[in-house]
Length: 252
Image (cartoon, rainbow, N blue to C red; front, side, top):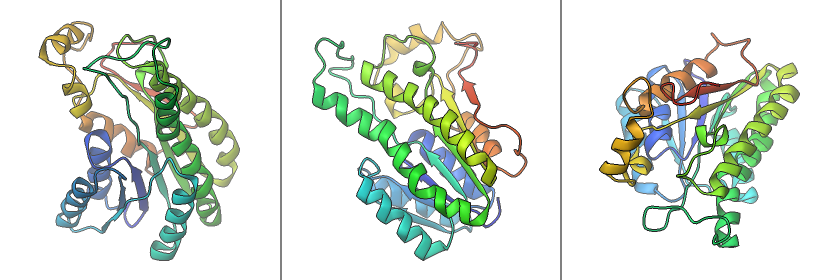
């Protein structure tokens, strides 16, 4: 991945941060995108630079079509190319630690989650594709969730629906972009030890741990290693796949 230009959305924390750092360790120039957590995003960039690599912060709101269009124009201006796109930005609202059932959910909350989790992946792919087509090379990984594959009592209908939509977007974009040597895949993480998971509390997480055959929660690094393989030039034949990263919790 040396000198490849990579954009990771939602990269200030958790999985996005781990992916950004792993890409940098493998030689990529990394654009760290996070609209809400600018300070933390800058800290990730400082860690990337400490590795001796180039990192930049772009604070575009990826749920905004206009912001994403401008961001891609800036990437073209600043780097001249975009080789790798990780559509990771996502939110999963809770109310006092639990989801709202569909019959109580605020429609505005539904729209916000769909915009951040699903529309952002479409916008980024839509505007990144011409940059990749121009170079006849691209790697895209869309971050879905185990909640898109099986029922979960934890995330709400908006999160599950948005992550299921990611899988459909992955299949279509993989088929349409493969002729240009742009490889698109998705990952579906299960219970990964991040700030989002910590919010559930120790007791609930102890119960969840009992459902994972391998006997531990995943780490952001577990996910980052899979992503880095998928976007590397070593992967040139896995196309349109969904890679489950859940310790055996859901074997599909």
